[in-house]
Length: 159
Picture: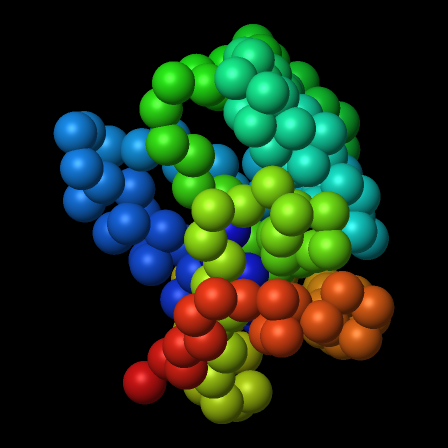
């Protein structure tokens, strides 16, 4: 599980971990595929637990459909998670009390607020700009309720 605020480098770290996993690339799922819109940080985290982590822990196939941000709904073919392969999940809200109990490793990433904002808006541009404050407020609620930094086995700060 790789959690942290927007623009902290979660996706970059997750891709590096998944690609370098021993015996071949691990499966990588971004919570961006599970959030049900701009107000859905908490719901996306819950879906990760029920659709990905719980089945994986039980050695069963997990399944989910990606959220289509343009259409505002979950759409397309179901994505299957192989229970025999390592699973890396990244995104704001990924590390909760529930997910921490199911994770083999948990990472918290953070960084300077202005630098994170610059990076996130550079990455996502005008699509994210009008939602920055709303999303940051959800991050604050997540941090207060779930204490992801304290649950993490490893805490990193972006340069």
